[in-house]
Image (tube, rainbow, N blue to C red; front, side, top):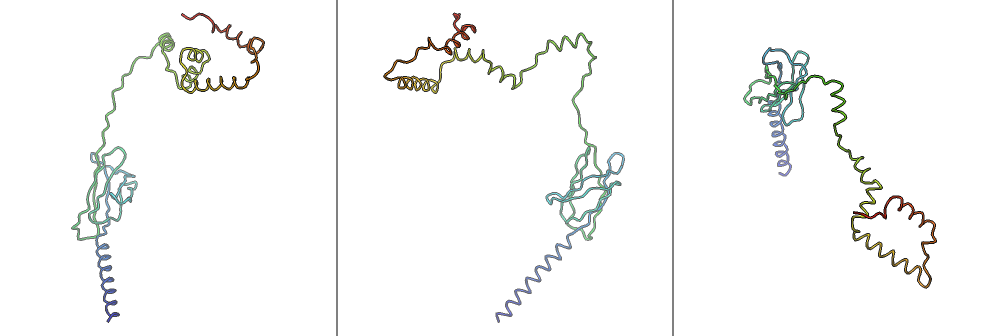
Amino acid sequence: MKTFTRLAIFASLIFICSATFAQKKDSVIQLYGVVMTADSLRAIPAASIVVVGKGRGTITNGYGVFSIAVLKGDKITFGSVGFKEKTISIPTNLTENQYSVIQLLVDDTVYLPATIIKAKPTREQFERDFASSRIEDDAYEIARQNTEEGKMRALLATLPADGREAVNFQFRQQATKLYYAGQIPPQNIFNPLAWAEFIKAWKRGDFKKKK
């Protein structure tokens, strides 16, 4: 009894699969035709024919002719550079397994902005305009100006120290105090390097009275 039941289930599955396959096979349609321009009925070579949502398609040959296998109910998009796309649907009530179309594509008009043509300037006008035109600084020039020594000194003299700089200065003061604990710290008046830095600062004008 169990063997008979299994055979019946197996036979039912084979019947269902066969019916589904037959139905699927019956829905396959051979789509063919030609793609042409709507105004002059000129064949469009290399036009794309894409089955929407299926990720497959084909292109027309040099005479605008194409052929592709599709299913009933599929949506087909025709397109080419310079033409508006056109989408059609394959009828679901076809009795034959072939379907032919003559697809006409309309030119895709693109309006460009107006172009104003002016007279060529003279050499004197070109030199004057070129010399008076100001070119914006690029990122490299801005970085160079921000890292310039004079600007850095001006920023150091005017901007207050932030928290990190203040803490580092305090730590350096404490380290110097602990380093020279129990002895006389050296005097920079006898340090030639300190004198060299003093002379450089004096030449730069760091000690001039600021207005």
